[in-house]
Amino acid sequence: MPDPLPFRVMLRMEIAPGQGAEFEKVWQEVGRGIAAQPGNLWQSLARSADEEDVYHVVTDWVDAPSFHRFEHSEEHVENRRRLAPYRRGGEMRLSQTVCLLRGAAAQGVADVAGSEHGVRYA
Image (cartoon, rainbow, N blue to C red; front, top):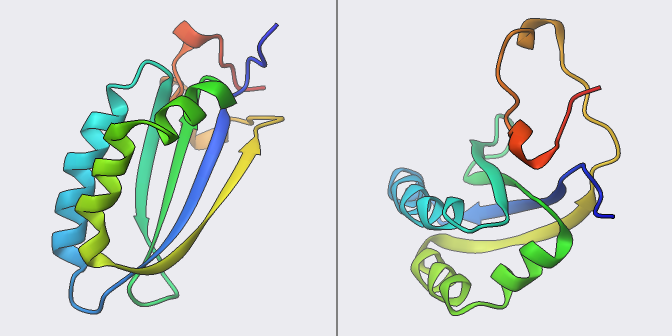
């Protein structure tokens, strides 16, 4: 039985100085295509609060095979090509979520990952 908690991909992306606004725009365009992937639950882009020209991407997938199918697709190659002019470096980390805890301020807020995939906060 598949794990009901999401498979998480975390990226740290170093962006060329002065290219942040354009990178954000292109990332959002690329992100809409990723969001249309059948196994993608959600994703977010965050600008680092303590490192200049650094962004963090977090994206959750139904399971690892769903992510890996996308990772090896032509669409992914095209996305990397579109983002390449802005990137100076970075790294990727893969993980299996083991627990999701909803904070007090999130009570009454819909599950980000979506209940249609069986993902539940503890």
